[in-house]
Length: 267
Image (cartoon, rainbow, N blue to C red; front, side, top):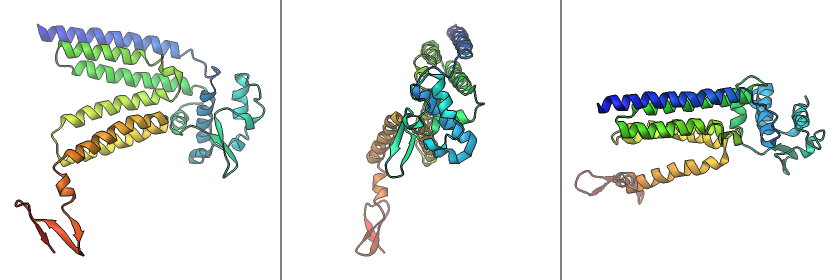
């Protein structure tokens, strides 16, 4: 009976998450990219540069606005000095080079550049919301009992719901949420495995994903620092620390760990 109840709960939560997803997709389909937020324009300009110049789009100097893309975006939101790119918002001067460049990391621009112009934001948020919905379903149907199903279902529906508010506040949050969901899943799998040397592959993959997260939002450095501190603490607390110091140069020779008798030998 308990298993049947848990399965029924999974179906209920799955439909709840699906209902939230459907409502979000409908709402997102009516969004307008010109909502008057300066950050949005700069993310879209970065994407535009990547679409025009490929990897050369990393150079975001305002002088490269020779097609007036930035000016047109500023005019859309009625920016007072839209015709003067020297006063463009979210651009910082680089005294050493004399350039005026976008102040944000390029990650969001790279994601938006993969999507069709004019529909980039809608497509990015829809795909991100579908990804979070997929993780929520996975967690719900992986739950093993009624209690864990309730927890997974509640947090899953909440995660999908939050994909508009507050995630809509910044374009950088949507890809960040997806990466965090994937990092959380991989972290759980990593920690559930027996401790052996093959775990290094999982750590490398987590490091790559956290690097992507930092390229979406600099504030994600705090997320990455948590993993760094955990790994550092685990390493320092490990008995393998002795192996780390097992080989070292002493008076021009190599001092080696002898084996089981806690002694050293010299070459």
